[in-house]
Image 1 (cartoon, each protein chain N blue to C red):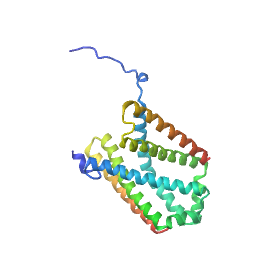
Image 2: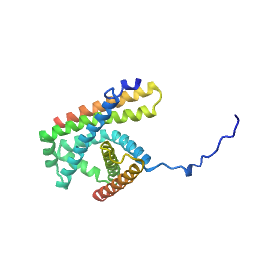
Image 3: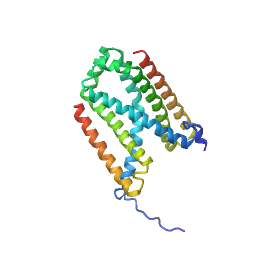
Image 4: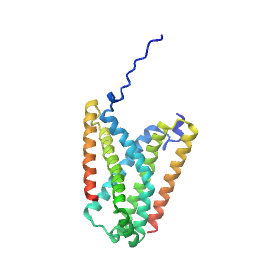
Length: 124
Length: 115
């Protein structure tokens, strides 16, 4: 019973399939969005309170650092939305197979990347 | 099955369905806000304020906020039950998340009705 265990932990040889990457990013972006809720509510409160508050928030969000944070936050939202649409399509029976699931994962990622790039252009 | 006490509806299938329903509401709300932005790219305070002063927008926003509470609770619950194995710590984190979400809901309602 004392057979030597196979040692095959070549980490570089292991990689996640596209479906797994899509899934974990959906989860991660969801958790990020949860932590963003208070900041979004704060921005909503300030922007609705007065014209001066609206202006101040606009000035604050257009500083270089905040532009980057805004872009990152909106990216999480866009990604979570697009990956969520994939789930809703699967509810209707689309892309439920192994191969079609992989294809839809790649398409989902591509769409998300394109929208996030467009967002970057709109912000800067 | 003990975990079910802390899940949003106490029933996996119902949680699954609520996650979908709330996803549709939040998705449509996001599309609505996007439409507002693309129709008025240089949105100013007057327009922004009148938008949320509209009773239908307010109702849609409340619907989205309720969906956000349900959707976030089910999502974060799933994440916590996956990774936090110690019951006491898990319950503590779940309680903190639920209290935070309820606080956000009340805060958002106050924002909408005191603008």
